[in-house]
Length: 319
Image (cartoon, rainbow, N blue to C red; front, top):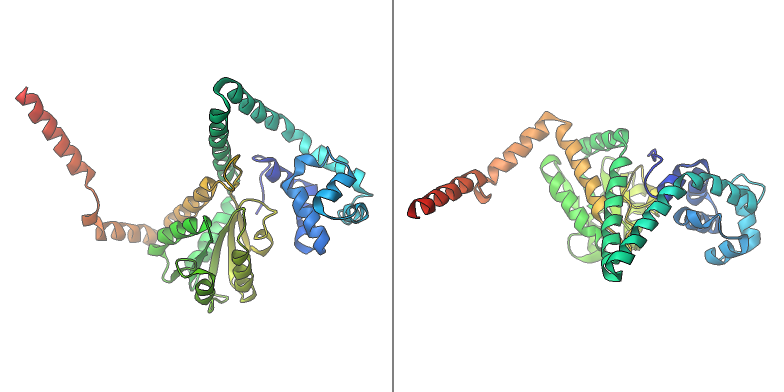
């Protein structure tokens, strides 16, 4: 997926030429190179500020290993890579400082409790905005066609992501002949059983945010080995799901208090379901049939409003 040059620093950096090189090393490099690349992709703002010894300590490698990594990325050494990172980050420093000033302003005027609350809401709004701005229409269309043609569609998410996977499954159900929510009950063992027969005609839509569930990665790897197409909804190009995905949707999950914010993930899900619904007139008719089928269980707001008006009129007459 082509990442557009706005949004969080991590996304902006990932789109740069240096970020793309790091993603390549994360996907195909040695174990130490993958660890270094992931750390740098997650912490791009620290690269220009820290020396080679500090980065080496943070990533658990030697300075010599970090120098070899820089050369593998196409630079003469770590100083040259750090300089390139500074150039890539220069354009985003101003909006980052603006956000920091805004949060500090709230801290000064509202006290620490309100500051954390406000910064959490601001982070959520930024996540949602970034997810919407980075939605790639071509990728959305390709995934929509993939779902429409799939023999079976599987949704997968553990922990908090399981709720998003359930919402996605519920929304997709009217438009998929066969659909399985992998983690519905029974834990990992039962989930693995539900994926047992997944194959090349099927699609797995996997959702995972920090803290990533190792079972989600393992089951996704199994589905990919079986030839299934993988659609991933995750928070960063540095996510372990990114290298397994045939199609990748980025939903930033930054939050000052929570381990992950899920609002942006819901934006991606709603966009995906909307795209599927409008891609085929039969899907619109299917949605109408569903509404009719459950109509007697829904609140009739028009009748309710009429009743409220009649009640108000009667009350006025009584006065």
